[in-house]
Image 1 (cartoon, rainbow, N blue to C red):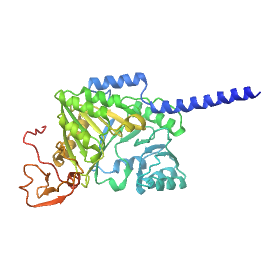
Image 2 (image 1 turned 120 degrees about the vertical axis):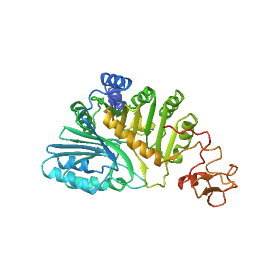
Image 3 (image 1 turned 30 degrees about the vertical axis):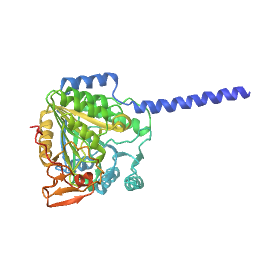
Image 4 (image 1 turned 90 degrees about the vertical axis):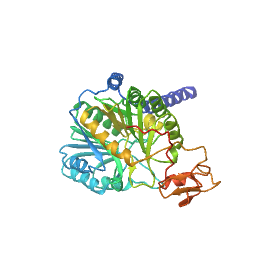
Length: 410
C-alpha cells in the first residue's frame, strides 16, 4: 500500500512538473507557427510584406493621443487592451465609459514595480472598482511589455509607447494602426490565450513579430540591409543585435543609431562606433527622450514594436511589433528620424580614461565640449565648468570633441 501511494505521489509530481515546464517552456518559446515564421523570414529577405493597405502610422509626441482616445470612444462591441504602464486618468475614464455603454472591455496590466512604487495600481483599482474586467499579466513571462489596443476585433494599435500621460510631450515614439484581418485575428487569439493563462504558439498574421522569440526576425532584417540601417531603441544590451549592426557597418551599410545616452550602454556604443556605426545621442538630462523601438532597412522595410534590444525583451517578455513596407509610412518615419538625427549630438568613442576617474577634473567648455586631462585642448580651455568624472560631464549635456577624421553619414 505504501509503495502504491509512493508511486502515485511520484506520478502526480512528475505530471505537475511536466505541466509546469510545458507551460513555462511553451510560453518562453512563443512565436509564430513554423509556416508563419517562414513567411516572415521570406518577407524580410524579400524586403516587403504582403499587403500594407491596412496600415497607418502615429508619431509621438507630434500626433498626440487623439487617435488612441478616439478608438476607445468609438468602440461598439469590444476592447482588448494590454499595456505595460497605464497612468492616464482620461483614458482610464474612457475605458470605464465604454464599459458603461455595453462594450466588453478587457485589460491586461503588467504588475510593474518602479523604484519601490507600483504605477499601475491606481488604474487597476479604478478599473476593477468600476466593473471593468482587468487582470495582472501572468508571470510566466519575465514581463508583459506589449502595448496593443484592439477595438471591435477590426483594428489594432500596435504601440512603442505606454499610456503614461507625463511622458506624452517628451518621448519619441510610434504606433501602427493595423486593420489587416489576419493580423487582428492573430492578436485577438494571443490576447485570449494570455487572458486565460493558456499556452499558445503566437501566430504571425501577415506581418507580426512576437516575443518571446523575436530575435531571429530582427536579426534577419538587419542582416538583409544592403545600403542603410536607421535605428531607434531605448536599450543597447543584446550582443546579437550589436554584433549584427557592427557586421552591417563592416560590409559597407550606412548604419545610424539614435538613442538617449545612458552609461549602461557605454561599452556597446563604444564597440559600435569602433566598427563604423554612427551613433547620435540625446543627453539623459534632455527634455526629449528616445523611447521608440524601430529598425528601417534600406529605406524600404521597417520594424515598429515594443521590443527593446535586450535578451529579456527578445527572448523572455511578451512583446509585439510589426513589419511595415508601405512607402509612405517608411518615408514618414525616415523624415522624423532625419530631424531627430540633426538635433542629437554625435557620440564619439570614449577614451580609455575611466568614466569614474577623479585623477583630475573634466572641463566642460562654453561650447559644451568635455575636455579630459591630457587632451590637446585641455590646457587651452580657460572658461569651463568642472566635473569630477567624464560621465558626469556627458550626462550634463556635454560631448566629446569631434575627431578630425570622423565622417558623418548623409
